[in-house]
Image 1 (cartoon, rainbow over the protein chains, first blue to last red):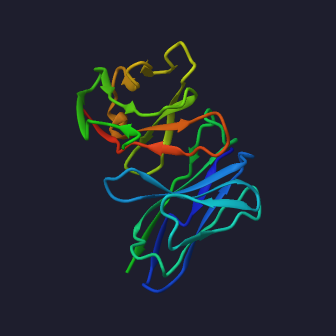
Image 2: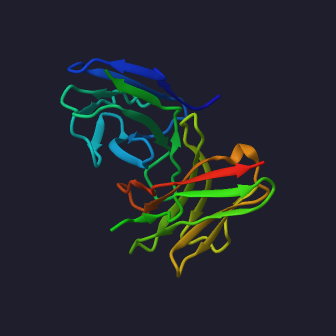
Length: 114
Length: 116
């Protein structure tokens, strides 16, 4: 079955620690994305990648970092510089980067900072 | 200015009835795509339906249809024969242009509650 997996489902972090959220897709999609969702809010774009070894900042990239060494994988690191990291994180992918290309989402990771 | 507006924070509908969720958008591009997603309490975003700006027919996918009124810049989602499992948040999204580099913009969402 093709799809997008995210792990872990729930993640707890102490203040001052970096954590990495995993996102893997086997859809052979070129483009991948990371979004943040706060309670009762819509989605905000953190980072996106159109192709391997290339990525760009989204609207709220401060305190986050990514890498795209493989087509299938787009991990997100939440650094200690992120002031309010408690949120729901969604990874998505799309076949390409045209206006018609639909984004498909993973199940999400809920991060809580203790 | 908001690119995607969803004016209904919450909606209620009786089971088996139809419901319309509103979405208006703002773009100066001629080519764009409009998308609806469902987010149940589990959190996953589920793609429902797509409408291209050049599509002359309204999109339909099973019980979902999109009432596309280009001149009014509106792309309302119609759910027919509502089911209890339709209770969720619904997001309207837009992707502008047919060139690389355009990202999705999401609306604030509408919470739909289906009553038995």
